[in-house]
Length: 414
Image (cartoon, rainbow, N blue to C red; front, side, top):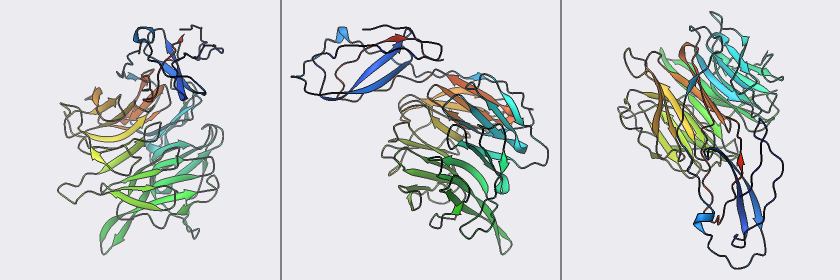
């Protein structure tokens, strides 16, 4: 075991070590664990031309027990209690943006420790439902009735953008979710309302850009029977979207979408509100009304129901979900009835197979969305609520072929 001292951001100088004689050929992991054995990081390296594999002595290579507990702490961002927050996003370099009611935009450059108001909510202004980064500097916020704004300076200044379809006709969708898979390719998920014979119908829409948001095209083969509440992609380019009617669609090229999950109509119809991939992109979880949790272990190809935590009221609607790693994630939601459960968060340490309740606030109705980077998760909701969980990322589970571990006591960012 080797030791070193990290700086305030968790970085440290190179540490050399000898590869044990029992190391397996191919990919192996080197691990760095802090002094409390609760935070860890790893790096893959390749071993070639090794001799016969020996069995390591368990006493010489202990496995730290990673904590899957999640603790939430309220944040203060000078947001009026009348302004709810509906979306939050990280850029991976410490910048966080939250958006919400009446066009509210707040920004942090230190992973949520301090905040500045970029645009204060205003009565009569359209709501912002979602926000996403295309890269470290370029951000996009979408919302009510076609509201779309972009920033090229990390969220400090914003410029309105018009949403158009393939014929360049201006459209006015409610943009429930914004996501970019690269600086040039991005998606808007949502829909509009249509009047037919005196009745109002929801029309689902997904728009796509391939030029960094200069132009947006309405995808033609996306089912339009209900609005799309969320869209997510993994690093392999597989995309998922979930709808008000409980449908899930999937794509491998961003253009052609296939329905992979569908619920029967009332009385069993359950709305799905958000979907997210784990960091490794293999597992996905979709969440919805009445504590619905759906899990896929084949990147969204097939789905199975997962039970909510014991004792949780089935009146809770899960509205948002995010993963900070390949195993650790949280879902948030709430209830809108007086005296009910109120704001709720549940968390998992095994990629969504099992969940436990980690936060509750009966005084406020909903947490609407959650965003994470590798060490921080922030959830936002009604009455300007912002809560944060820091340093709660468990040690990733090594691949089955891992034959040894090297531990480096370091100080990780909390």
